[in-house]
Length: 210
Ligand code: PRP
Ligand code: URA
Image (cartoon, rainbow, N blue to C red; front, side, top):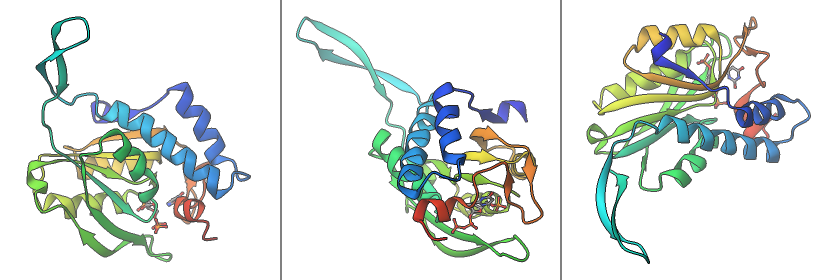
């Protein structure tokens, strides 16, 4: 499991995460912080993209230099809260295609319920990055990845901002082939399956719906 999970300990990410967790942080700043952390995570999660050499001319001379070797990416936010991570990812990789999976957790059972699913038609040629700020029980991430796997993409990575130990265990056991990136691994969950210390309900904080 160690090789499958990357937990970021970068000072910039930790600093921004502290402000995200703060109950006094309002939606505008919260959204900005989600974007900034996502951008930093994108940088790390795309570290293994293959490069190829091309010939260019600088103002000084001809030289060989590297560009990304035509790897096709797809970003799939899990609605709603995953949308908060999307713009930052697209800013880094504007050519990526975007799919959407709509899931919400039933308030009683905490089980995910699917309500929307639209993926790029050529997803089988693409490396997929699934986006969701919160990995709590892991149910939503596991179901979203089950849905995406039916379309047989090249590979799948899962990016979240805060993960519970239970969520990491469940996700890595259900999908041992999926690389998991998170900004922080928290202590656990409460009786309502909210992450502790966490940041509360990510969707409500992004969209101001509480
Ligand atoms: C949140 C979060 C994840 C899910 C994580 O979504 O964005 O999708 O819970 O919990 P899990 O790991 O236990 O499945 P929520 O169901 O609150 O829906 P929302 O994004 O529409 O608010
Ligand atoms: N979903 C959230 O938005 N927050 C949690 O702590 C758990 C699930």
